[in-house]
Image 1: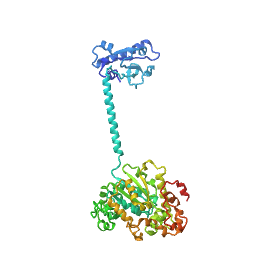
Image 2: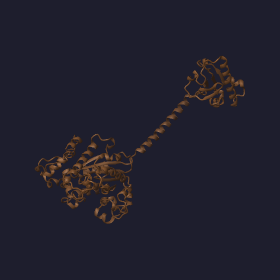
Image 3: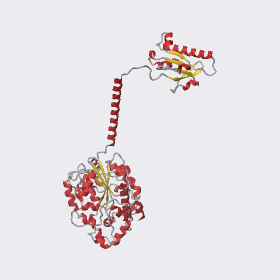
Image 4: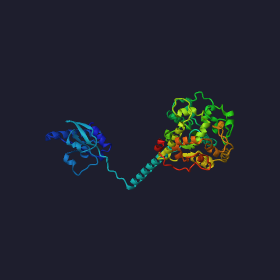
Length: 513
């Protein structure tokens, strides 16, 4: 930097209000004559530079008003000018006087260093207290405005998605199809039954654990109404009927998929199959986007932690209804559909695609283990994001007092129970006759309480003891009473469904069984 550049930077257009103080600190051992010569050189150069700025027509004026040649002693005196320029040769002791980064100036003895540039107060400006107060008020208002805007952006980003996502988590033959229909028939619900069936049917040579991620990704996409996820499993998809158990979904039997029923109607699976099956598959996504609630029923998830990425996904408003049933009743129901469950059994037991029957209750043991894991994960020191997003329902409580339990599930899901649904629920749970083998996967009017207790008169006590041994931990934590004799089993007045309470049962104790 040249002397002219230094002065232009320091004066900044206010030469009459700023004095430039110039220190030439001689090197150690320099003679008095040498110091005088160096000061004279710098003084001459600075005066010439001032004149070149066009603001110093008279040399004397410039000397008197803008430039002072000071000694080191003068700098330590009482005078502190409003702005000052200190220049010292590179490496001199004067370099410690100021902390402002230096820039170089070439002098007669080599490179020198600017140690301090002009101070912040270039001129003495008088500001009234009123002006200061107004400035502070404006500044405070501006900061509050920024905070409000920031808070607004945060609240918008943290707003829940417009749709509510409900996952009914259960296992085979636990009453999950019935619970699914309680949601499917609601006019605000888009419902699909077990969409992950397509994953298992396509990749049946893998284990349930390996398929967890694929199942989760499919569930996420369906919740977001992105039905292109089925391309990997239904590359030929053309019609709605390509979906597993599509006709049990009221949403796929009404507008915009099919006009057979109105949205507020209670739909019939058989009637829907006869008319709506050839509706284009693209209508599924269109229908999904038109509902406030998306409900999926799944029996192919054995670990709640698999769903953590969905529960923490800000684009989803996910809640989980965990449906459980007395394992002894599950066994009785599974025996009615043993062949239909053989492939799923092989996947649960990692049999590389081999179909197996569950004569030794190995699959049942895995199911019981998964119910315990899911329940404990959600209730014993659960993560904060699970708060108010998990509800456990026992099938036995549901069929004993359906309106109370269904109202609780609807409230949890943000739905209202309509009078039409209430009448349908009463009829579907107060039918005549037991369930039959051909109705194993259908929802027909039955006496639900009798169905839930049928195992007590059908299963042998030997089987019951075996199931109790395999699922002792689950029976304990879910609130089901063990039977110690055939007499207790057959005595229907002896209630085996205990009042539900949090158990002190731990996973470690279950692992020992």
